[in-house]
Image (cartoon, rainbow, N blue to C red; front, side, top):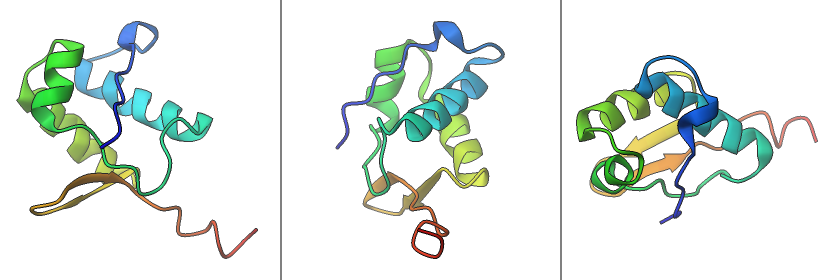
Length: 88
């Protein structure tokens, strides 16, 4: 599991959207790579000082935006860029 602990101070808006923005930023900068396992909801909630519900909402929004994918029983992962191999 990736020990990713974002600093949300530079991201405005509701906490769940700040987390989504932090995920997008980390993916763009290469700090999170395709296939990386994200922290559990409980672990990330404790690290950033929010509820597990906030993390659930953030992960759901990040998945809707194509950043993450959840696998029942396995966890949440950074989604592979489907265009990465098609356009080197």
